[in-house]
Image 1 (spheres, rainbow, N blue to C red):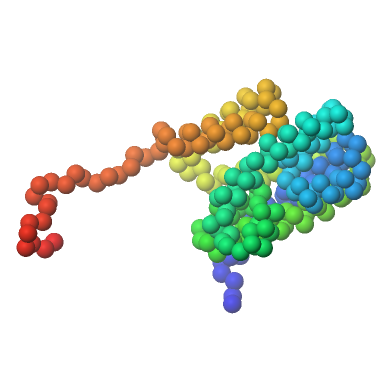
Image 2: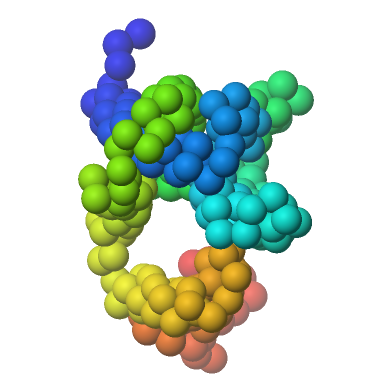
Length: 246
């Protein structure tokens, strides 16, 4: 069966996001080795944990506190990982039933795959966006994690290359087309302001969750959205009398 234009567009977007997200796996690999992990530990974490935010949290805490900071590193990673469970609730109706399918989907339910999937207009393109993005990021992330680990300190400060900002740039590209209404802009702005204010104060992971709660509150109250149209109130003369048909 020929591939539709919508299918092709979803695949292109998925591969583009996968490429951008995979790029900063080099940053993770280099930082992990610099923090004291060896190549195998660095790669196994990417294979099994496979959530960049949590991996960076673990590496960051270990880099500053050493092995003694292990419990704090685990706590930070767990806090950041909570969002993946929330994504799973959103993605379950799209992925559909089946034990093995859901097991594979749970492995690939990350920021990028969820964002690309919900940005599509049909169930078919949502599935394409989810699976292609998840697979692209998984393969790319693990490959670049290995490369970053092998290169290690030879890169110097990996932030100088902008690799740590690749994921944020990819997400901004996904979010921007959806900012068409004042309510959507208000939700995004409120979450961004809260996350920025909380980052210097709270431990890694908490600012994201607090910002998420703020986004839920602002989105629920719908202060900046268009009022719901209920239609005119029925008038006495509008009620059908017995024997009359409308």
